[in-house]
Amino acid sequence: MSKQSLDRLLQSQGFGTRKYCRTLIEDGEVAVNGAVHDNYKTLFDTNDLVFTVFDEEWRYREHVYLALYKPANFECSRKPSHHPGVLTLLPEQFTWRDVQPVGRLDHDTTGLLLMSDDGPFIHAQSSPKRHVPKVYQATTAEPVTDELIAQLLAGVQLHDEPAPLAALVCEKRGENLLEIVLEQGKYHQVKRMLAAAGNHCAALHRSAIGSLELASLGLQEGEWCFLEPEQLALLAPTAQSGV
Image (cartoon, rainbow, N blue to C red; front, side, top):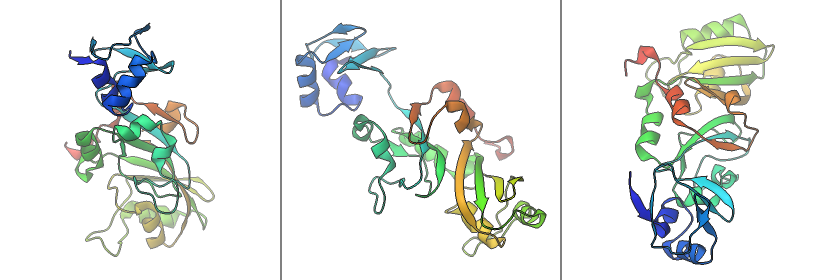
């Protein structure tokens, strides 16, 4: 347990500078556990603390772990160049908290994207040593064939990789739809593997990371949610990783 003054508490949660947070408090815009407090020096135990700002309820979180259903035409960058950034889909306080995407999805790729302000978590989840499988649905330009699946399972050579890259799982889901599971997380990996196998990726969607499935979160495109401990546990590495 720890105690913080109300202005520091709000600042830590991304509601602006301490000066701005003090103004919010003195203006009566902040309530803690249902009671309005206008003294920014008041100390509060952050354990299980619930507060409201402008009548919107929040729970104190030392770090935030988010899942976003990323739409197409959004960039996973804090400084996007050609499309809006995914941070524009989140409340402003997450920008103040320095929330960042965990890895990247191409601007035209949709699906499950993790985001956090916890640096060690971001590093761990992004590390190829963790062997966390990621599940994709790839719409192909040409029909899916048994030969294509066999190639992807056996491994295809990409021009800048020292060894062939293989899918953990590869299954046909439709005439031009392929479900592919990877754990390496290389740049544009699904698209490049399909190209190396003689096909072309027309559309790509990430449906799961580890055992955390996007469908289980009940999100629509562009929506986000907090991830709780039981959901974070589903991001564990695969058994064969030895981690």
